[in-house]
Length: 149
Image (cartoon, rainbow, N blue to C red; front, top):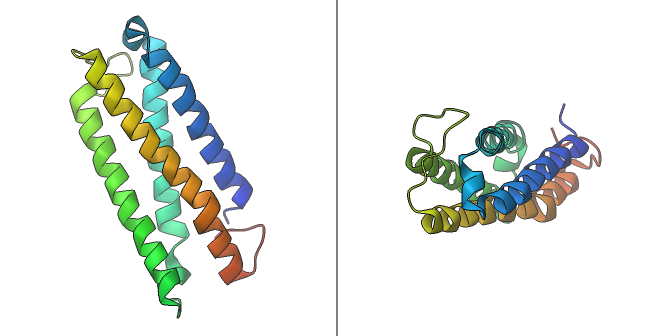
């Protein structure tokens, strides 16, 4: 059983880490610290875990819903999940290829910062869309105001 409170807590944690990391990454010297690298890997793990949880548990009944708009929205979320995972994989291959908690490989700080901001923006938009579109849809179709799955 997954509650909306749990989903929102995960989203809050991801948002908080995004904000902290973006602040830290703006200062080039912070990018090479163990603390930043550890936080970044924690962030990636949290995003992946959240997407997996949502993908595996929230879409089932909605994919078979009689309303085409409901099915289309769910399909959009599913394809969005794939895009985010592709982006994260490409990003981590580029900037942390060895996945060591104490290593980010940053040769071009401006490019790194630009790609990081883009990735964070996409993930934060996904969180907002979940909150404003997906969760209300699940509440509406299931009638359960507390439990998402």
